Length: 140
Image (cartoon, rainbow, N blue to C red):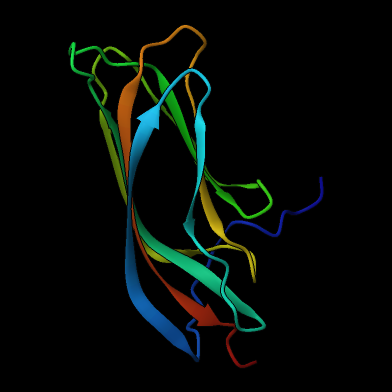
């Protein structure tokens, strides 16, 4: 099996850093799902996005109904970066993860969110909060 370029847990220390930054996204999860760019691709050559924290979840709608939802962080071409994390209508509403070593997205790729909900499910609100930094490849 070929090794994927994204994602990688890395212990590298970048020599040029932008950040730290935080992105807070919220929206509506419906049966059709959604896709949203959370963080644009780095503009410098040989630069990548490094994630240090992610929190995601769903909240009930006005009728206090939760829906099944599957969250996946993807890079700019749709390759999975983190997840999927499955949220169930039985009450799991929050997931939070701190990365001891940053999760590096492939050089020059954006960070997006893909959420899918089963057909016929109720509409619910979802959110994602991400912390990280942008850095150039280490000097070797």
